[in-house]
Amino acid sequence: MTDSQNSNGSAVPAPLAVSGPTESPWLGILQRCLLFAAPAIVLIVVAAWIFAGGFAALSALFSGGLVLVFFGISLLIGHRMGSKGASAMFGAFAVGYVVKFVGFAGVLIVLGSPDWLDRTWFFISALAAVLIWLTVEMVTFSRLRLQIFNDPAPDGDSRG
Image 1 (cartoon, rainbow, N blue to C red):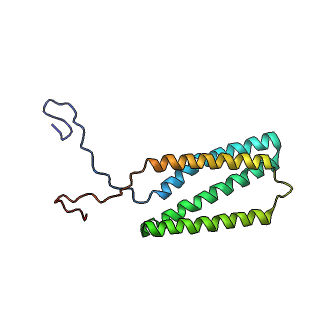
Image 2: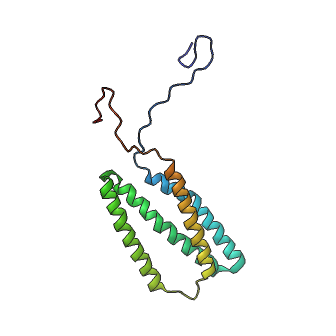
């Protein structure tokens, strides 16, 4: 008889172990978002190339890449600042968002609308990337186990 069998030989499920809070979810969320958004952008780039040519494909790749970089920076900030406490992390998110917004707006203003840019495929790729990224990010984040309160210690002390 083994530990996973009872006296009549049938299997007994092992007890579940306490998992604890997720330490740093940000890289996992980033990986999952890229796993879904990047292939979608590739499909849009291929469709743009087939239906509208090389400049349309380049436009789709450019806008999809901008979205991935824009949102990816936020998750990297969360990963880097996550261990420093909630107030530091949220402050870094706010500063990072402003810097990203101003930076990307500056790049787009300086770049303007080049002759090769196909606005329709630029828009399609950017919209698809944003919708896919945010959907995956919300679903993944909603499945995290985040510890909000300290669990009481076995002796009743709640300081943990």
